[in-house]
Length: 329
Ligand code: TXA
Ligand code: MG
Image (cartoon, rainbow, N blue to C red; front, side, top):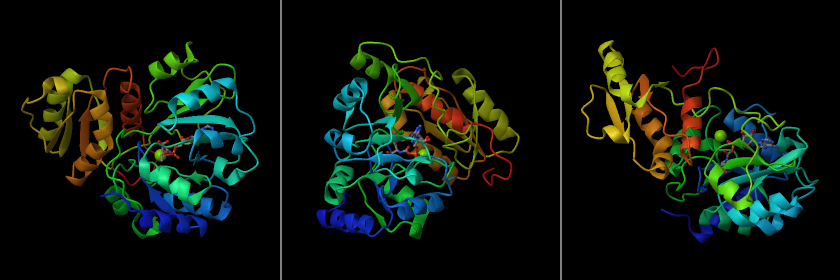
Protein backbone atom coordinates (compact mmCIF):
# COMPACT_ATOMS: atom_id res chain seq x y z
CA UNK A 1 0.00 0.00 0.00
CA UNK A 2 1.48 3.33 -0.95
CA UNK A 3 0.25 6.80 -0.09
CA UNK A 4 -1.79 8.57 -2.81
CA UNK A 5 -1.22 12.17 -3.96
CA UNK A 6 -4.19 13.43 -1.96
CA UNK A 7 -2.87 11.61 1.08
CA UNK A 8 0.47 13.35 0.61
CA UNK A 9 -1.23 16.77 0.22
CA UNK A 10 -3.15 16.12 3.42
CA UNK A 11 0.05 15.20 5.24
CA UNK A 12 1.70 18.42 4.02
CA UNK A 13 -1.26 20.38 5.43
CA UNK A 14 -0.85 18.60 8.76
CA UNK A 15 2.83 19.69 8.83
CA UNK A 16 1.83 23.30 8.00
CA UNK A 17 -0.65 23.24 10.89
CA UNK A 18 2.10 22.16 13.31
CA UNK A 19 1.05 18.49 13.43
CA UNK A 20 3.03 15.27 13.36
CA UNK A 21 3.28 13.02 10.29
CA UNK A 22 4.82 9.56 10.24
CA UNK A 23 6.60 9.11 6.92
CA UNK A 24 8.34 6.22 5.22
CA UNK A 25 12.00 6.65 4.33
CA UNK A 26 14.28 4.06 2.71
CA UNK A 27 15.91 3.41 6.12
CA UNK A 28 13.12 3.41 8.75
CA UNK A 29 9.86 5.34 9.30
CA UNK A 30 10.31 8.84 10.70
CA UNK A 31 8.10 10.95 12.99
CA UNK A 32 8.07 14.25 11.14
CA UNK A 33 7.32 17.87 12.04
CA UNK A 34 7.94 21.27 10.42
CA UNK A 35 11.63 21.87 11.22
CA UNK A 36 11.01 25.62 11.59
CA UNK A 37 8.14 25.32 14.08
CA UNK A 38 9.60 24.96 17.59
CA UNK A 39 6.23 23.95 19.11
CA UNK A 40 5.77 21.18 16.54
CA UNK A 41 9.35 20.02 17.10
CA UNK A 42 8.64 19.99 20.83
CA UNK A 43 5.72 17.61 20.28
CA UNK A 44 8.11 15.07 18.71
CA UNK A 45 10.12 14.90 21.94
CA UNK A 46 6.93 14.59 23.96
CA UNK A 47 5.46 11.77 21.85
CA UNK A 48 8.72 9.83 21.71
CA UNK A 49 9.55 10.38 25.36
CA UNK A 50 12.94 11.57 24.17
CA UNK A 51 15.16 13.91 26.24
CA UNK A 52 15.07 17.39 24.68
CA UNK A 53 18.87 17.61 24.31
CA UNK A 54 18.91 14.79 21.74
CA UNK A 55 19.27 16.45 18.33
CA UNK A 56 17.06 15.57 15.35
CA UNK A 57 17.82 15.12 11.66
CA UNK A 58 16.41 17.74 9.26
CA UNK A 59 15.12 16.07 6.09
CA UNK A 60 15.18 18.19 2.93
CA UNK A 61 13.99 17.63 -0.64
CA UNK A 62 17.25 17.87 -2.56
CA UNK A 63 21.00 18.44 -2.25
CA UNK A 64 20.59 21.89 -3.89
CA UNK A 65 18.68 23.07 -0.80
CA UNK A 66 21.52 22.23 1.60
CA UNK A 67 22.83 25.81 1.72
CA UNK A 68 19.44 27.02 2.99
CA UNK A 69 19.85 25.00 6.19
CA UNK A 70 23.53 25.11 7.12
CA UNK A 71 25.94 27.99 7.68
CA UNK A 72 28.78 26.58 5.62
CA UNK A 73 29.30 23.65 3.22
CA UNK A 74 32.82 22.23 2.89
CA UNK A 75 33.99 20.69 -0.40
CA UNK A 76 33.93 17.29 1.27
CA UNK A 77 30.32 17.75 2.36
CA UNK A 78 29.39 18.87 -1.15
CA UNK A 79 31.04 15.83 -2.69
CA UNK A 80 29.31 13.38 -0.31
CA UNK A 81 25.93 15.08 -0.80
CA UNK A 82 26.25 14.88 -4.58
CA UNK A 83 27.34 11.26 -4.51
CA UNK A 84 24.94 9.80 -1.91
CA UNK A 85 21.79 11.97 -1.90
CA UNK A 86 19.04 11.08 -2.08
CA UNK A 87 20.03 8.19 0.17
CA UNK A 88 20.81 6.84 3.65
CA UNK A 89 23.51 9.38 4.55
CA UNK A 90 23.22 12.19 7.13
CA UNK A 91 25.75 15.03 7.18
CA UNK A 92 26.53 17.05 10.33
CA UNK A 93 27.40 20.67 9.48
CA UNK A 94 27.33 24.11 11.16
CA UNK A 95 23.71 25.13 11.86
CA UNK A 96 22.09 27.77 9.65
CA UNK A 97 19.72 30.41 11.13
CA UNK A 98 16.62 28.65 9.76
CA UNK A 99 17.14 25.71 12.10
CA UNK A 100 15.76 26.37 15.60
CA UNK A 101 17.86 25.23 18.56
CA UNK A 102 14.91 23.05 19.63
CA UNK A 103 15.68 20.80 16.62
CA UNK A 104 19.40 20.52 17.35
CA UNK A 105 19.09 19.94 21.08
CA UNK A 106 20.86 23.27 21.59
CA UNK A 107 23.86 22.40 19.37
CA UNK A 108 25.44 24.80 16.87
CA UNK A 109 25.62 21.95 14.35
CA UNK A 110 22.74 20.37 12.45
CA UNK A 111 22.27 16.91 10.93
CA UNK A 112 20.76 17.02 7.42
CA UNK A 113 19.70 14.35 4.96
CA UNK A 114 17.81 13.92 1.68
CA UNK A 115 15.78 10.69 1.91
CA UNK A 116 15.33 8.52 -1.20
CA UNK A 117 11.89 7.01 -0.55
CA UNK A 118 9.46 8.34 -3.20
CA UNK A 119 6.76 9.08 -0.58
CA UNK A 120 9.21 11.05 1.59
CA UNK A 121 10.38 12.97 -1.46
CA UNK A 122 6.81 13.71 -2.56
CA UNK A 123 5.96 14.95 0.95
CA UNK A 124 9.03 17.21 1.08
CA UNK A 125 8.16 18.65 -2.34
CA UNK A 126 4.50 19.22 -1.41
CA UNK A 127 5.45 20.77 1.94
CA UNK A 128 8.30 22.88 0.61
CA UNK A 129 10.21 23.17 3.91
CA UNK A 130 12.42 20.97 6.04
CA UNK A 131 11.04 18.12 8.14
CA UNK A 132 12.71 17.10 11.39
CA UNK A 133 12.18 13.40 11.91
CA UNK A 134 13.61 10.93 14.36
CA UNK A 135 12.70 7.27 13.96
CA UNK A 136 8.98 6.89 14.74
CA UNK A 137 9.34 4.73 17.87
CA UNK A 138 9.27 5.40 21.59
CA UNK A 139 12.66 6.40 22.96
CA UNK A 140 15.04 3.43 23.24
CA UNK A 141 12.89 0.90 21.44
CA UNK A 142 13.12 -0.75 18.02
CA UNK A 143 12.75 1.52 14.98
CA UNK A 144 9.67 0.92 12.78
CA UNK A 145 10.12 -0.39 9.24
CA UNK A 146 6.41 -0.61 8.31
CA UNK A 147 3.43 1.72 8.74
CA UNK A 148 1.82 -0.94 10.97
CA UNK A 149 4.80 -0.83 13.33
CA UNK A 150 4.21 2.93 13.68
CA UNK A 151 0.45 2.57 14.25
CA UNK A 152 1.00 -0.16 16.84
CA UNK A 153 3.63 1.80 18.71
CA UNK A 154 2.40 5.41 18.50
CA UNK A 155 -1.32 5.07 17.71
CA UNK A 156 -3.28 8.32 18.05
CA UNK A 157 -0.22 10.32 19.11
CA UNK A 158 0.54 10.80 15.38
CA UNK A 159 -1.80 13.04 13.38
CA UNK A 160 -1.22 11.31 10.05
CA UNK A 161 0.57 8.11 8.97
CA UNK A 162 1.80 7.87 5.38
CA UNK A 163 2.12 4.25 4.25
CA UNK A 164 5.02 3.52 1.91
CA UNK A 165 5.35 -0.23 2.40
CA UNK A 166 8.34 -1.77 4.14
CA UNK A 167 11.63 0.07 4.24
CA UNK A 168 14.29 -1.14 1.80
CA UNK A 169 17.44 -0.53 3.83
CA UNK A 170 16.04 -1.39 7.27
CA UNK A 171 18.69 0.31 9.44
CA UNK A 172 19.07 4.06 9.93
CA UNK A 173 21.26 6.41 7.90
CA UNK A 174 25.01 6.67 8.35
CA UNK A 175 25.80 9.91 10.20
CA UNK A 176 29.04 11.62 9.12
CA UNK A 177 30.58 14.61 10.85
CA UNK A 178 31.90 16.86 8.07
CA UNK A 179 32.63 19.89 10.24
CA UNK A 180 36.37 19.15 10.50
CA UNK A 181 39.17 18.30 8.04
CA UNK A 182 38.72 14.55 8.14
CA UNK A 183 35.17 13.26 7.98
CA UNK A 184 34.22 10.82 10.68
CA UNK A 185 31.37 8.32 11.07
CA UNK A 186 29.27 9.14 14.16
CA UNK A 187 26.78 6.31 13.57
CA UNK A 188 27.23 3.43 11.09
CA UNK A 189 24.22 2.92 8.81
CA UNK A 190 22.94 2.32 5.31
CA UNK A 191 25.94 3.81 3.47
CA UNK A 192 29.08 1.82 4.28
CA UNK A 193 32.51 3.09 5.31
CA UNK A 194 33.89 1.37 2.19
CA UNK A 195 31.50 3.34 -0.07
CA UNK A 196 32.32 6.65 1.65
CA UNK A 197 36.07 6.08 1.41
CA UNK A 198 35.82 5.08 -2.26
CA UNK A 199 33.90 8.30 -3.00
CA UNK A 200 36.41 10.47 -1.11
CA UNK A 201 39.51 8.63 -2.30
CA UNK A 202 40.89 8.71 1.26
CA UNK A 203 40.27 7.05 4.61
CA UNK A 204 37.76 8.41 7.12
CA UNK A 205 38.84 9.15 10.68
CA UNK A 206 39.17 6.13 12.94
CA UNK A 207 35.93 5.41 14.80
CA UNK A 208 35.52 7.55 17.91
CA UNK A 209 38.05 10.17 16.75
CA UNK A 210 35.52 12.95 16.21
CA UNK A 211 35.28 15.47 19.07
CA UNK A 212 31.51 15.40 18.49
CA UNK A 213 29.69 13.05 20.79
CA UNK A 214 26.39 11.85 19.47
CA UNK A 215 23.78 12.44 22.11
CA UNK A 216 21.19 9.70 22.06
CA UNK A 217 23.71 6.93 21.51
CA UNK A 218 22.96 5.23 24.81
CA UNK A 219 24.32 1.74 25.45
CA UNK A 220 20.76 0.44 25.36
CA UNK A 221 18.88 1.58 22.28
CA UNK A 222 17.06 -0.15 19.43
CA UNK A 223 15.99 -2.66 22.09
CA UNK A 224 13.04 -5.07 22.01
CA UNK A 225 11.21 -6.00 25.22
CA UNK A 226 12.98 -9.38 25.35
CA UNK A 227 16.51 -9.38 26.72
CA UNK A 228 19.11 -9.82 23.93
CA UNK A 229 22.23 -11.93 24.50
CA UNK A 230 25.01 -12.11 21.91
CA UNK A 231 27.15 -15.24 21.56
CA UNK A 232 29.56 -16.66 18.97
CA UNK A 233 27.68 -18.03 15.91
CA UNK A 234 28.78 -21.59 16.75
CA UNK A 235 27.26 -21.31 20.25
CA UNK A 236 23.80 -20.02 19.31
CA UNK A 237 22.09 -23.42 19.23
CA UNK A 238 23.61 -24.73 22.49
CA UNK A 239 22.96 -21.43 24.34
CA UNK A 240 19.36 -21.34 23.16
CA UNK A 241 18.73 -24.90 24.32
CA UNK A 242 20.32 -24.25 27.70
CA UNK A 243 18.11 -21.20 28.34
CA UNK A 244 14.99 -22.95 27.04
CA UNK A 245 15.72 -25.86 29.41
CA UNK A 246 15.82 -23.34 32.27
CA UNK A 247 12.22 -22.48 31.51
CA UNK A 248 12.74 -19.29 29.50
CA UNK A 249 10.89 -18.64 26.25
CA UNK A 250 13.85 -18.31 23.92
CA UNK A 251 13.88 -16.61 20.52
CA UNK A 252 16.80 -17.46 18.25
CA UNK A 253 18.50 -15.60 15.42
CA UNK A 254 19.83 -18.67 13.62
CA UNK A 255 22.96 -17.73 11.60
CA UNK A 256 22.64 -18.33 7.84
CA UNK A 257 25.49 -20.86 7.97
CA UNK A 258 23.33 -23.01 10.30
CA UNK A 259 20.17 -22.70 8.21
CA UNK A 260 17.87 -25.68 8.69
CA UNK A 261 19.53 -26.82 11.94
CA UNK A 262 16.87 -27.93 14.42
CA UNK A 263 16.86 -25.77 17.56
CA UNK A 264 15.02 -26.32 20.82
CA UNK A 265 13.51 -22.87 21.30
CA UNK A 266 10.23 -20.97 21.55
CA UNK A 267 10.72 -19.21 18.19
CA UNK A 268 13.40 -19.22 15.50
CA UNK A 269 14.25 -16.60 12.88
CA UNK A 270 16.62 -17.71 10.13
CA UNK A 271 19.07 -14.85 9.51
CA UNK A 272 19.35 -14.15 5.75
CA UNK A 273 22.75 -14.81 4.18
CA UNK A 274 23.14 -11.37 2.58
CA UNK A 275 23.91 -8.38 4.80
CA UNK A 276 21.38 -6.27 2.88
CA UNK A 277 18.57 -8.73 3.61
CA UNK A 278 19.73 -9.09 7.23
CA UNK A 279 19.60 -5.29 7.69
CA UNK A 280 16.23 -5.05 5.93
CA UNK A 281 14.71 -7.67 8.22
CA UNK A 282 16.50 -6.86 11.48
CA UNK A 283 13.97 -4.66 13.31
CA UNK A 284 11.01 -6.72 12.05
CA UNK A 285 12.66 -9.89 13.41
CA UNK A 286 13.14 -8.28 16.84
CA UNK A 287 9.50 -7.16 16.90
CA UNK A 288 8.32 -10.59 15.76
CA UNK A 289 10.14 -12.37 18.60
CA UNK A 290 8.64 -9.87 21.08
CA UNK A 291 5.17 -10.53 19.67
CA UNK A 292 5.69 -14.26 20.09
CA UNK A 293 6.30 -13.61 23.78
CA UNK A 294 10.01 -14.43 23.96
CA UNK A 295 11.79 -13.51 27.22
CA UNK A 296 15.25 -13.85 25.75
CA UNK A 297 16.75 -13.52 22.27
CA UNK A 298 19.99 -15.34 21.45
CA UNK A 299 21.83 -13.87 18.46
CA UNK A 300 25.33 -13.53 17.04
CA UNK A 301 27.05 -10.66 15.27
CA UNK A 302 27.67 -10.67 11.52
CA UNK A 303 31.11 -9.98 9.99
CA UNK A 304 31.95 -6.36 10.79
CA UNK A 305 32.40 -5.13 7.23
CA UNK A 306 30.09 -3.29 4.85
CA UNK A 307 26.50 -3.19 6.15
CA UNK A 308 27.51 -5.73 8.81
CA UNK A 309 28.99 -2.84 10.83
CA UNK A 310 25.58 -1.16 11.18
CA UNK A 311 23.85 -4.47 11.98
CA UNK A 312 26.46 -5.27 14.65
CA UNK A 313 26.09 -1.75 16.11
CA UNK A 314 22.28 -2.11 16.44
CA UNK A 315 22.43 -5.64 17.85
CA UNK A 316 25.15 -4.54 20.28
CA UNK A 317 22.94 -1.70 21.53
CA UNK A 318 19.87 -3.94 21.70
CA UNK A 319 21.95 -6.17 24.00
CA UNK A 320 23.33 -3.22 26.00
CA UNK A 321 22.73 -2.68 29.71
CA UNK A 322 19.31 -1.15 30.36
CA UNK A 323 18.66 1.76 32.67
CA UNK A 324 17.19 1.04 36.11
CA UNK A 325 13.41 1.13 36.04
CA UNK A 326 13.29 0.20 32.35
CA UNK A 327 10.01 -1.69 32.04
CA UNK A 328 11.32 -3.90 29.26
CA UNK A 329 12.42 -7.14 30.84
O1 TXA B 1 17.71 6.92 8.87
C1 TXA B 1 17.61 7.80 9.71
O2 TXA B 1 18.55 8.55 10.02
C2 TXA B 1 16.23 7.96 10.39
C3 TXA B 1 15.23 8.39 9.31
C4 TXA B 1 13.86 8.69 9.88
O3 TXA B 1 15.75 9.48 8.61
N1 TXA B 1 16.28 8.91 11.45
C5 TXA B 1 16.90 8.66 12.63
O4 TXA B 1 16.74 9.66 13.56
O5 TXA B 1 17.53 7.65 12.86
P1 TXA B 1 17.05 9.50 15.11
O6 TXA B 1 16.55 10.76 15.73
O7 TXA B 1 16.48 8.23 15.61
O8 TXA B 1 18.59 9.49 15.17
C6 TXA B 1 19.28 10.68 14.83
C7 TXA B 1 20.67 10.63 15.34
C8 TXA B 1 20.76 10.70 16.84
O9 TXA B 1 21.67 9.71 17.30
C9 TXA B 1 21.31 12.10 17.08
O10 TXA B 1 22.04 12.19 18.25
C10 TXA B 1 22.15 12.34 15.84
O11 TXA B 1 21.36 11.78 14.82
N2 TXA B 1 22.32 13.77 15.56
C11 TXA B 1 21.38 14.65 15.19
N3 TXA B 1 21.88 15.90 15.08
C12 TXA B 1 23.17 15.81 15.40
C13 TXA B 1 24.23 16.77 15.50
N4 TXA B 1 24.05 18.05 15.26
N5 TXA B 1 25.46 16.32 15.89
C14 TXA B 1 25.65 15.00 16.12
N6 TXA B 1 24.67 14.06 16.06
C15 TXA B 1 23.46 14.45 15.71
MG1 MG C 1 16.07 6.38 16.55
